[in-house]
Length: 108
Image (tube, rainbow, N blue to C red):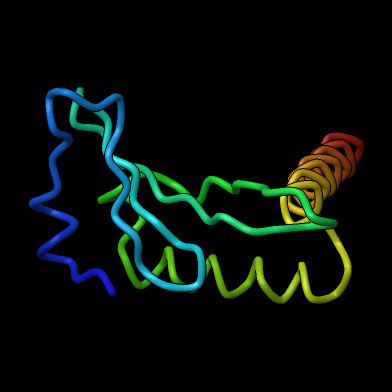
């Protein structure tokens, strides 16, 4: 399992395109040669491997990445594709915000 210190000190070797540091449950931190660090969750659905981006480190801390992974696992256990479910949630949120803005504009 990763620690916050290991995440901070992670670097990509010069001979690799990217370096992956595994945590648990399919969660890993991918470090690029430029120094950027991103969280991903690797999962399998219908025999195919999928990968879900969870955010950039340090904006998304280790504990938050683990929580996002756990949430995605629950969605997957419910029989849904976690990536598609997140896209639908974003669309729904944007639509509801537009409706709220139109409602406020109509009152003015």
